[in-house]
Amino acid sequence: MPQALSFSEQLLDSHCVVDVRTPLEYAEDHLPGAINIPLLSNEERVEIGTLYKQSGPQPARIRGLELTAGRFPGMVAAIASAAAGRPILVYCWRGGLRSKTVATILELTGHTAAQLTGGYKAFRNHVVAYFASFTPPAPLVVIHGMTGIGKTDFILRLSTDRFSTIDLEGIACHRGSAFGELGLSQEHLTQKSFETLLWDTFRRMPAGRPIIIEGESRRIGKVSLPGDLYEIMRTSTKVWCSASLETRVQRLIEEYGKTEYRDAMAEALARIAKKLGGDSYRELQEHLKNWEMEPFMKGLVERYYDKVYYKTRDWKEEFSLSLEDYDRAAGELDVQLSSRGI
Image (cartoon, rainbow, N blue to C red; front, side, top):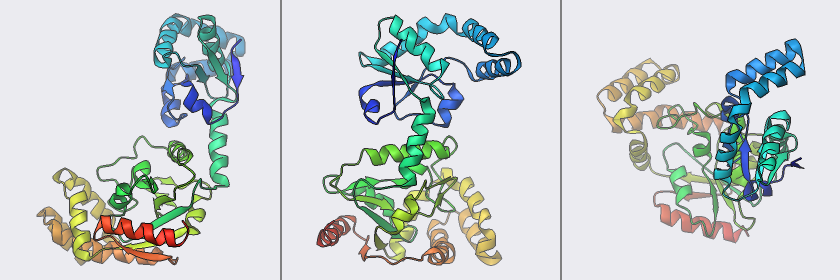
């Protein structure tokens, strides 16, 4: 019989993690780094589940054997190739028959395999508990500022010898604004997978370096910050960043001013038409139609973004930082944080 192991973070680094659930289950969320070698297809799982409810466990198991017996050699070969000599950790939904079957066959064919106790559900409970009483592995420094000043670019340019950084918008596949989906897509991102990605990012952070993260609202596109992370960010060191209107407009043009975004930009503009007002909407719509990016972006900043941001700002920063020059701002950030013992 294969060994049963309770979830620990170390298993993700020491084992080849194999998810034997269906492709749909895997797509919703999975353990970081896990490969999907499904025992049953999406349709087969529905069939087996229905048979189990209607006729009981024995007919369901017999039918499951009929469906899967012929694919065991191929599964073993695929898993062994991916493992490349590492021990194997197999999991399913709750540590039940699917993972036990595959782990047993792996053991019988000479591979070192274990079954994850509690399966994906045990891992999911671990992630939920982590954010429910969140304690960051190092001090959080939260970067705030108006749209277009280059907060994400600035964070990604910071020295990894001095700081740890989290691209929260990159993980969420959304920039947290009316035009936030341009060039990104949350189509395949679920709340569960977002939380797993965020958990995995935090767990990899070294304890000694402050973590620089961009300030966001509770909701970023279709996903929300988990547990009490938002509250922890609100009580962490906050930095207000600024840049001139001219710089912001140029940075927005660099990020969004791509002709392939034209239709999506028109749709996004239409969604905020009421907030802009009829005259402003029609004026910006005309600029977009003529691909006049400078007046279009300037109008968005002045008539929409700045007004919305100021309405939602209800905190006080510890210090301010100009992002006109990213390198100079990085040096100033280091000085300011060092003076505060961070």
